[in-house]
Amino acid sequence: MSGPVLVVVGAGPRGTGLLERIAANADLVPGEGCEIHVVDPHPPGAGRVWRPLQSPLLLMNSRAGEVTMFTDDSVRCAGPIRPGPTLAEWGPHYDGRDPGLAREAAALTPDSFASRRLAGAYLGWCFDRAVRSLPPRVRVTVHSAAAVALSDGDRQTLTLSTGRRLQADVVVLAQGNPGGHRTAEQEAHQAFATRTGGTYLPPACPGDEDLDRLPPGEAVLVSGLGLAFVDLAILLTEGRGGRFIRHRDGTLAYRPSGREPVLHAGSRRGVPYLPKPVLPELRDPEPRFFTAASAKHSSPRELVAAACRELLWAHYRELFAAHPERTRMDAAEFERAFARLPVTDPALVALVADAVPDPADRADLSFLRSPLAGLTFPGQAALGTWMHDRISRTVARATDPRHSAHAAVLHGLTAVGGVLENLLAEPETRAAATRVAARVAGFAPFLGSGPPPHRLEQLRALAKAGVLRFLGADLRITQDEVFVAHTSSLPHPVGARHLVEARLRDPDARSGVDPLLAGLSPARARVPVDPGTFQVLVEGRPHPRRLAMGLFAGGGALGSFSRPHRNAPFFRQNDATARWLLTELAGVASQTRTGTPVMAH
Image (cartoon, rainbow, N blue to C red; front, side, top):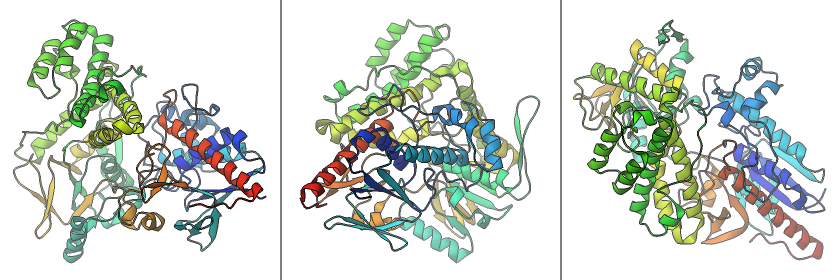
């Protein structure tokens, strides 16, 4: 076969999604066909994050019914709609040879939080389906190797870790999050641990680390209370033979194995991420305060305030609509008063107190400021009691239909994200929207990327069993004879020989973790791209046939999966990009037929 060549670096969800959209838009494939090379050292579809060979204890934080890789009638895109199963719908049809995955898949329901291993199997199936859907004149070759260098010439040359070189007409970089370099502070922590005989684990996915370096029974300081912390806690407890037991009264307890370390965990905010709600689906109303129209006349600071107001309004709109008996003010009157008051104004607190008598029905403001702000406890035991009550409340809000207003805040976050996407696409609002997006990114994971509710119950059980102790807010680590944790919540510091930074590395193309990206972006943390087309910018100008989509780039970082029936940006981006790629390949084919030189630069 001859024809133009497309290379996709990265076979995870983004690369798989692009391949599915290329198959859907196959009518745009050049008549003579084309070649597609997919490069990834990890299994196609799953990639590194969702690879099948990882602990079955590591879970997704989205319900199986809310996970899909396929378009539906809600998606507004130029290409054909090609429906496919959600993870929950696919589960009963799993036909792999792994007996553990087979049992899990057979028991999967739309409300299940599947293992990451099963999600990887689903992604592998999606990848294979996309390849099978391509017409015969398109040949796909998968290379189980890393891409280490990319250069320009008459065509682009991609060098693989095997030494092979691929000649490409169009290249898409879709490696996801390659990780980042260590900061000076992290290097100092590593040197201190080496010098004192302790252990230091820098930011990373806990499932990728050698956790056996953390000895049983010893204290371990943990910086971070997000998803990485939850994974770490589970791997060091249940992963070491401990067991969770549900009592007859419904409470969860933990029975230690004796092989656990004692985790002392804190963070900037000092409390775990809010759990994902498991309540019935709510409608997605149009944004009320954070809109594209109002954004054109607002400063970045005003836009951030409007985004926060939108989230709070999502809560109260649902409360007044679905549970009016728990309010004591006319809904329209409340809305008018709410619209006039800044979200930081004490008068807003007074308004809510008048309108919503039960504090349990009021919006949780912990995404804006720590609930531990201004609180100091005599010791970890007292802080643990406060945290026990806090976790109990957040779990109830995530699981009890009475608290649908708390789930509605996630819909407000979706509305804000949709408006930001539009603002980022417009040159006149792009600069302000970029600053707002950075601020929203500071609290969006706490609100929308929390663990399943039962994980919070497990943390509460671990704390009661004595293998998890909390440090509180404003965590700061110093070094003495050991690592020392200081927080604003406790009067005395806590020391330990071992320290884990429980969070993922910030993406940094310069780190050298991915040598290809380091070569492309030696002076910048992100590979610069055109936000509309994702074309890589070379000396400020879009490269005609090189794209970058992922956390390492300036755009395209919208997550691994999307929810069905939400017109997800992930699908719209993939469809537009696939059609752009096929148009470029057709252009290359036309130039080849007419004898025009094909230049990548």
